[in-house]
Length: 307
Image (cartoon, rainbow, N blue to C red; front, side, top):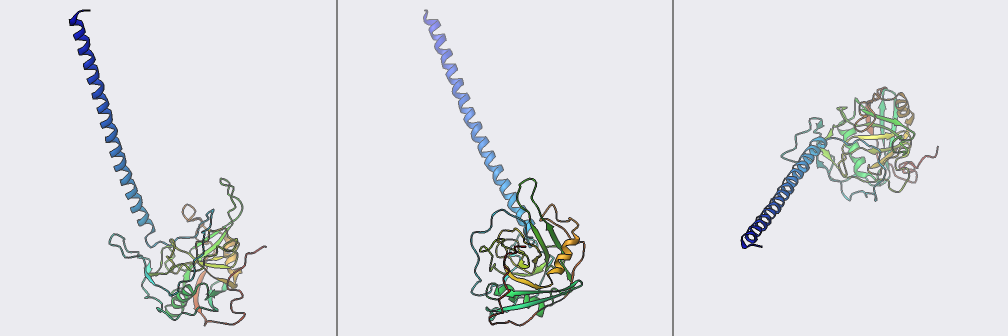
C-alpha cells in the first residue's frame, strides 16, 4: 500500500473523528439547552399555578366537599382565642368586597365549659343549635359576638344545599352528603367578617365524622374559620377537616324540608350542590347565656346515627 493512500486514509479517519466529536458536542449542548428551557418552563408553570391558587382562594370560604380519607388528628381548643385579619395581609392580594368589618370578639373571658344555645328564627320555623363550650369555646364566642352584638346573621339566607345519596358511578364510593350551608350575608359563598380564627374540635374520633344534626364550620383551609357554617340533616361522609361546634336540638326538620326540595345545581361543577330551591331566611339569630351542670352538654356533640 502506498504512503499516499495511507495518508489519505489517516486524514479521512481524522476528519470522521472530528465530525463525530463535533456531533457529540452539539448533541450535549442541545440537551443542556433543552434541560434549561424545560426547567424554566416548569418554574413559570409553578408560579402561574401559585398565583392562580391565591387568586381563587383569597377570602373564599371552602364549602365542605367529599373526600376519601379523614384527617389524622383532632385539633384541640386553643388556650386563648386569636382573631386574625381576613384575608391575611398581603401586598399582592386583592381585597375581598364580600367581607364585612365588624371588629372582633373580646380578646378573653369566653366561657369554656357547659353549652350555649343559638336560636335561629327562620321563615320556615325555628332551629336551635346547642354549642359545646368545652370543645369549641372560640367558635361559640364568635357566634355570640356576631349574633348578639352585631346582628350579623339577621335577614340572611342559606346559600348552598347538597343533598345526595347512593354510590358514585365512577369511583364506586358512597356519596352520602346532606348539608345546608349558611352564615354568609352576601349569599355568594365568599362573605363573612374581616377576621378568622383557628380550628377547634374536629371529629376524628367518630364515624361518620358528621352525623345527622351536626353543625360545623365551613372554611378555606385549616384555621380559616369565619362566619359560614353548615347544618348536617343526614349522616354525611366528609373528612374531619371542619370544626364541629354543636348540634341541632330543635328544628332539624326545617333543614330536612329545604333539603327535600332540592337545589338548582349552581355549584355542581365546583363544590357541589347549588342554591336551595326552597329559600330559607334567618329573620333573627340570638345566643343565650352559658349553661352548666350535668345535663348542659348532654346533646352538645351528636352521636353517629344508625337510622
